[in-house]
Image (cartoon, rainbow, N blue to C red):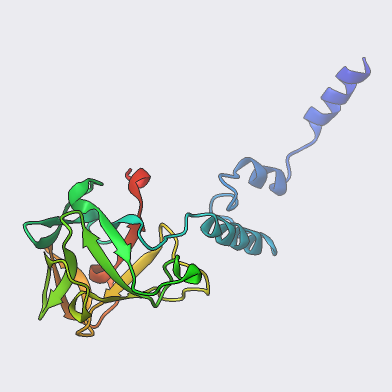
Length: 202
């Protein structure tokens, strides 16, 4: 039959290098160990940017969780001490993110904002010397943190973004061992935190 003849013809055609590459395609990023042709990298980059734009925006008054990027543990408050001991979104790990600005345009949190982080105990995160604590309810200079996002665009902060918290001393909050400190003006792995919301534990 014509169909049988066509199938025989197709089966007889040798596979080209392009065919073999197509069979080795492992993801939208391209086949394994293969440099994508011109244009594919741009499409992948655009898709990544679009994905980031779809992540939820962080608003003033939202409850967030801070994942320490190096240890993969969430920051928690226990007896006024700030630590990172386990991967968990519980009441001890929850912080309400706030800022002083008011008005309709100030509902979102932006990179560069001075923010306050309130634990479920009602106490604000604060820095005394090198110590990072949560012992008072006031919102003053000791409790203010500048939210830094290297390479940030003009938009608001989004869930999944890596941030650095600069204290009033000019030092960044870090996790050293399992305890929080503010010792260095540095943006490294010790000082990197990812913003999460409750549904993102995995």
